[in-house]
Image (cartoon, rainbow, N blue to C red; front, side, top):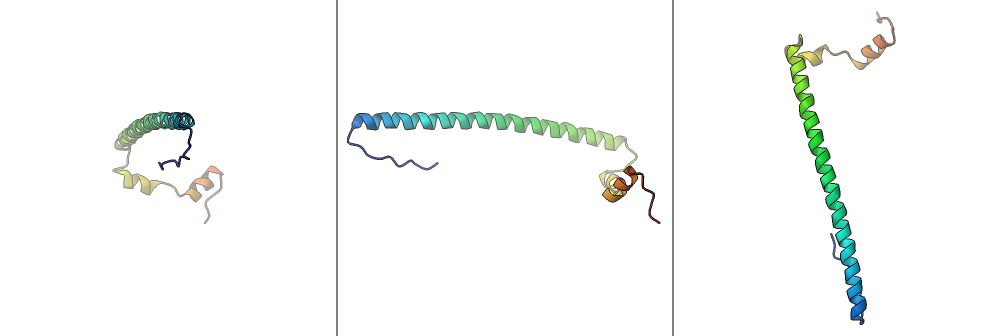
Length: 94
């Protein structure tokens, strides 16, 4: 954050009221940022938990599959073109 340039005034009461207003604005911004940080931290933790569960489910499914490991599974995947062709009921090109 950059320091805000403050105009000097000969009236101390006006300067004081201006300082109060700047303080309240800064406090409100800080409060908003703290709330945003809490929300994002909660969301990040939820996403981490979801990713860990997904990874565990994937690892378990792979272990129960006919594939020896993930590279073997990936090798067996169809290309996008082949998958689209089969889903559209097209016959193989010979």
